[in-house]
Amino acid sequence: MGSMGIILLGSVVLAAWLLTKYINKCLGGLTGDTYGATGELIDTWTLLTVLMVQQLAKM
Image 1: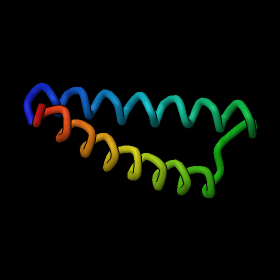
Image 2: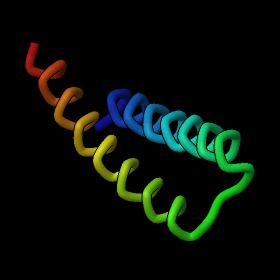
Image 3: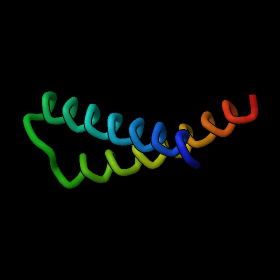
Image 4: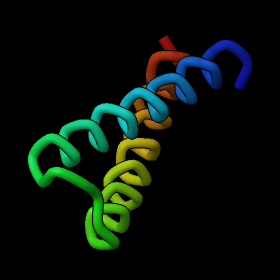
């Protein structure tokens, strides 16, 4: 995907980092459930970001 792929990767890494920082701050640590929820949320974020990048590429 070229430069759009780099933007996608950066977006996913940033989202995962921010989410884990937020969970860690709220709960004081991470558990198996929070790891699972983070995985599911990042999967969803990745799919949505791919769709947005594809729409931008068409413009």
